[in-house]
Length: 163
Image (tube, rainbow, N blue to C red; front, top):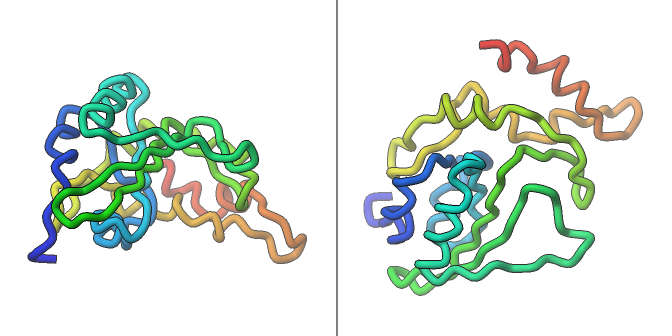
């Protein structure tokens, strides 16, 4: 990780309340452009974030209708440092669900933003470890009914939400 530099857009993003909220174990790959960056931005800072993306020549992508979800926007930009594309999934809400059916809003955006920490290797705000569990929709799978069930998340992990 010593040779990896943050793309220049992250200097501008210091002005915005945001976190990389999902799959933080893959943040190095995301910075390198090997996977997407899942960014949760405070709704009041959304306009500023969008202006920063525009200033840095990021383009909004329009997903097919069956791949569009409320509160999630896609942007693609070029990282001149390594010649790779960066793909931002910009979230204003925490929407969970199985693939192609993101239909459960978990209203903990403020908690995630307020308790975020700085990544130890990169100057990026990330989810605090005690809230990382939110990111695993597999923990909401009910093998007895063979369905995704958000109440299982609440039962299994509600003590994390009460910290």
